[in-house]
View 1 (cartoon, rainbow, N blue to C red):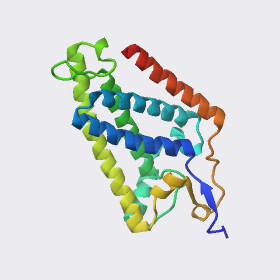
View 2 (spheres, one colour):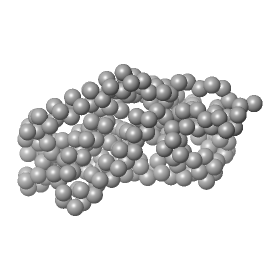
View 3 (cartoon, one colour):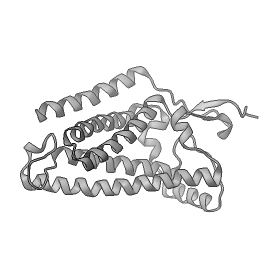
View 4 (cartoon, helix red, strand yellow):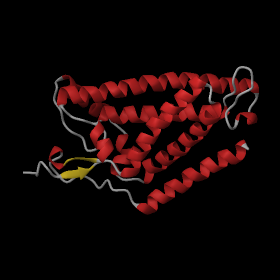
Length: 224
């Protein structure tokens, strides 16, 4: 019988750092936009671009639970998961469950749309624009601004659903999904067998970070 006290790493430290930096970065971007502090809004936007680039690369070369290939869910897997949820049958997953995987992909796509359109967005009077707004026409910049606004609403909706799912797991199954995203670990007894390696390797961390910094540097250089 597995030792109920034994812990196994599920989320590597760079993935957890990305998660929480993105949470706080998005909240600060929202606040700076509401307050009209556009210089900091732009800085935070470029920072989030760098974080997203790192996550994209990490999804290709990182450990098992970080990889996008693991998030490709078959319809029958999703249906089985939904049936289990409706029947209040809980099966812990090493990493994201099928619904969680789709949720993460949707939020990453929405956030990528949000920050990328923000780079080129131009406000209605043309006085404020994203770092790369000067490279597009006013009409195109306004189109980017509209998509930027819509994607923000989509992202808020997805975040709300994500929080509801976390609360549901906690209330129905007594499964705290936030704690592993803080500590990186879950009880080994949840899985029964030895799960895949989820440790971050320094050469890959450095490689992903260099690519992210290169993209951020290119944006800052192009934006003057």
